[in-house]
Image 1 (cartoon, helix red, strand yellow):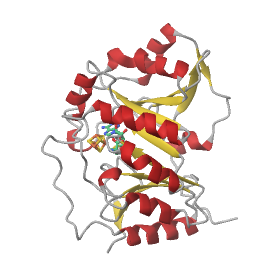
Image 2 (tube, protein in one colour; image 1 turned 180 degrees about the vertical axis):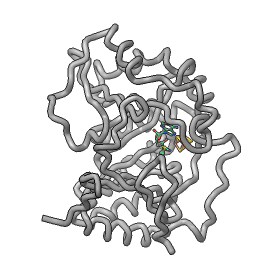
Image 3 (cartoon, protein in one colour; image 1 turned 90 degrees about the horizontal axis):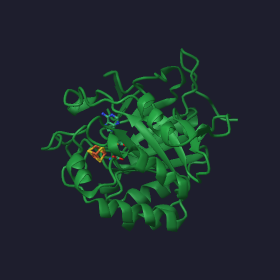
Image 4 (tube, rainbow, N blue to C red; image 1 turned 135 degrees about the vertical axis):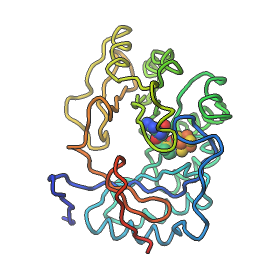
Length: 287
Ligand code: SAM
Ligand code: SF4
């Protein structure tokens, strides 16, 4: 058996989220200012070899799961080869990706060939106009083509993340839930967090997952999925609409804190290690 990292709260830290870039091809209103972020300079971004070295050390200390994220990870050149390079680390049981899906259609087969099987796609509306407004110009058809492609390619599970935004997409909760009746997706409702560059704009737009859940339950019976939590579910509570093939997940960082079960570390694109989203303390690994 390998090493484990047990912290002072007796949490087993086995999950590392790796941001490969701070850049993004969208500007979601709740995440980024419309002009984008002041970007990290080319020399400050970790090279893939440097990230690989950090993941290798982390795997030796007890990390078994890695998620590639950003910014938008698929905008960084060479990301599929990087994923393939992580497959050579034997301690890693699970390598996954979170993407906005815009570039997914063209990358799906390469990611699959690189050994990736699990993918999370962010999609906050099923309506083209509204999607473009939330993302400030995103083209929903690209994302839908990406989702179709990962399904055809054989990815599983395919998780679709929706940040519920009061007065913006909360009229689509049932449309998203209904998708699980006939499609093998895990539709995950995420509570809007008062974070980052758009933190203040997010005031008043928060919607509790208790409300999301009530609205779905008024439509159909929600059954908990197999009682026992699967380690791949992370902090999500997973249910199924009676008779549905897919699943519905609720990730509720605001209404139901899950700090006591948090098992993750984050590596920023410029090589800082963070243990908590809500804290600024970090360790400079690049230096
Ligand atoms: N660009 C990729 C994407 O959108 O999937 C990966 C990075 S993005 C920061 C990861 C996830 O965080 C997305 O599902 C996004 O919707 C979510 N997110 C961003 N800001 C958030 C906030 N303030 N509250 C809750 N979720 C947020
Ligand atoms: Fe980009 Fe993802 Fe943030 Fe949207 S949520 S702006 S896609 S990083």
